[in-house]
Image (cartoon, rainbow, N blue to C red; front, side, top):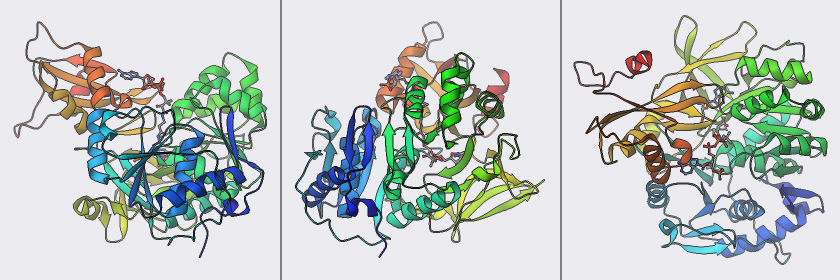
Length: 476
Ligand code: MCA
Ligand code: AMP
């Protein structure tokens, strides 16, 4: 049976993970996670308070070693969303750092603090590749987020396909600042280096200075969402040190949303390097990537494409009109389904093909070009997927809100910015924009808060009473 994290068994003195100034070698990670794995064996499901810390790395690795499905929690999740995730996933234990203050919503669950040391002992036998490894909550157009159940097999296959596409090896040192409760930051950003036997340095929070420092100190790869590359592109205009640092990296990879061509071009102009785009989804892990060899600095590969399907991924375009169709995929990278949602799981598949909802065309040389998505009620802001419906429901609860609609508008920094359209009960005294943003941040998550609030006397509706969102944005 293939081992998911072979380097843990070798347990060398090589640095595995570093979070700002705290690091663990493979030997330290293996003993700490091994001892925690023994404590949580048979626990059913565990939740992980997913701060960017070594404790989170130990907790995730322990759950993987024990074969216990783990639910990474956004430490900034608001009370409503947390309550939903906890009741839906029913974890028996929450794993946290010793210094973490957990919210009241987790008070009913027993807590184990992830250790950073442990006694060396044999690691548990490798669980089945089909067993659930992670349950990652992801937003849909309406209703609360759904838990995508990701098996070990999908993690192994996606990471190996990326390794092949990017020649990613144990010699690579990755730097990133992504959150650890989504696929990008956790599976690619932490488990990726660990599967290769390489190293990851997490910045704690994103800053251009942090990226510069780690790349100058020898990191070879950078992973980020387009917002981060946009901020790097802006900073490049102000100083040369960052340009030198980015030019040294072996690989600059962007994903989770489209990187605008203007940002691609600014980075290439200043550094001589082309950012490699890859495309994926929580339910499918990684699907496509530009191959670095085909991305020379002279623009040989065109920015705006997400490259070609990764090894093992089958991809087709469905219902094509004018060369544009929905991307459907199948392969060993797919999830097992949505937790407790057989209806949603069934609706997401067309036979054994998963419907991504993304619309694309294929260039003459086979490169996939994403041109939009089927659902207008899904917003990608800062690389986070956010459902308009969940925010509308939260806004409608707020005193003084009579009607609410949420749309995404183009934003140079975030890609899309959440805009709330509010019909107040009393037009003379509408609830304030900051109050509404705080309410959504407290109930759901800060990244779901509206960045702009617009007030209207009524929402535009068609004869069926359906809100016509397109005319909202057009009239703005
Ligand atoms: C602001 N904050 C608030 C409020 N306003 N808190 C409570 N109430 C409020 N009203 C807090 C925030 O929590 C945060 O805290 C800080 O203020 C700044 O928030 P914000 O302005 O939202 O942050 P930002 O600067 O806009 O963040 C940009 C970012 C972020 C760093 C790029 O969007 C990000 O990390 N994105 C990554 C998303 C991601 O990983 N997506 C992958 C999923 P504090 O200061 O403490 O932080 S997609 C995926 O996985 C697929 C598979 C794929 O293809 O990759
Ligand atoms: P999530 O559901 O949060 O995992 O986000 C997955 C979605 O992000 C995909 O369905 C795409 O719409 C989008 N996405 C991810 N990577 C890219 C990319 N490189 N270019 C365009 N869209 C992307």
